[in-house]
Length: 227
Image (cartoon, rainbow, N blue to C red; front, side, top):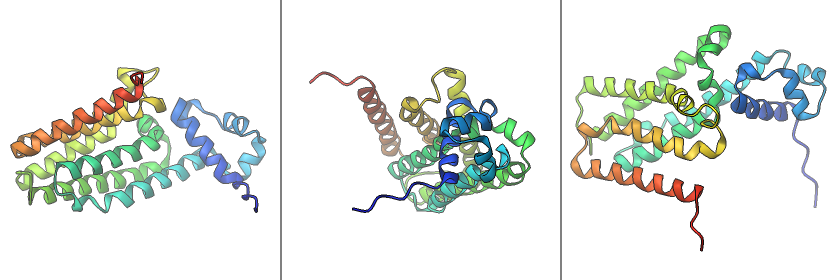
């Protein structure tokens, strides 16, 4: 059986940078720390990425691609259950690149590429949320055009600053991997709760059931009962 080819160094650098940025925050991680975690020389890292901002830019481009693929399907959502699954996927992608959102203001203040391109990503997110709401209005949601736009904006704000809120609640642990599912359930529930006034009673009840079931599964995963 043929051996798998070793991963390219550039790819390993990106993966390690993402892990360290997510764990400790981008401002707190140096290129020296990244090269040490990889067991390579700083010169080897600089050969692939001559500046830390180039690592950030490459990771942002991956985040942009991952989000854009999902955003294209926002208009296919028809009901609360579909919205729950779609929004959960959206929150998962944000979580995967959480350092961008955790350190957003800092990054935008000093990184010209992010300053130029992050607002466009946010606009696409808002437009996709609008498409989701308009689609739901055909079957399960009652909002007029102005309410659709306002609600989509509120949902985009919540998505953008959700991780900051989670971090303030528990600075030492909130962004650790074992907190991901519980944090995402809270985020999705908060976002979709904005729709409650316009949902039919059955759909509103289903939203509460989805939130309750997800929270219960997370609780069992954290503290499984003995067999």
